[in-house]
Image (cartoon, rainbow, N blue to C red; front, side, top):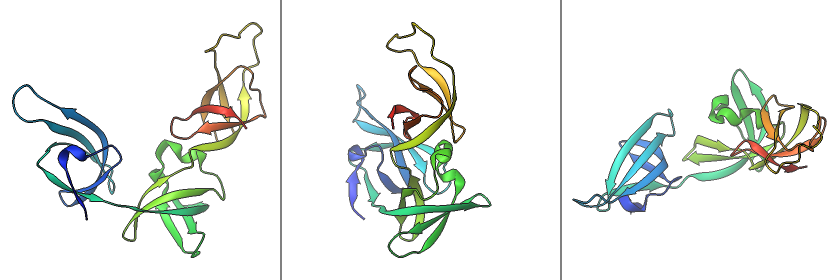
Length: 187
């Protein structure tokens, strides 16, 4: 595993620290008036989700882990487990449904997602950045409400509520950004 200096840690890096695999969530570089500079890093454990705040000086060496990314196709959900299949080898894996967190409703049948593996253990899953959803319910357009930042609430076919522009009506397909969980554009 490549070793990096403590001041080279960036958000999204996966580190081996204290015998576990940790993802850097937030990194603040601090240069106090007295003493050496350091990086204040908020880490999240990839196996159990616990959080940890650590200080790394530039002289500290940490192991950076490279995760292997594979595209997996979503097949179905069974007893709180999501079943995925590798499109090349047809090998199936199970991941807990809570691995996607609040983005779980955006997972659709047959969707291809990226799963990150460490050796043969699946640690993380990411949805495509943009997903097409149908608006089920929204308020009617109010005449004269054409202000640039006027948005109205809408309920999507997966039950998620998002804010949409006034011109979007019921039964329209829209594109939702899965990272920000916000309206992106019309489909």
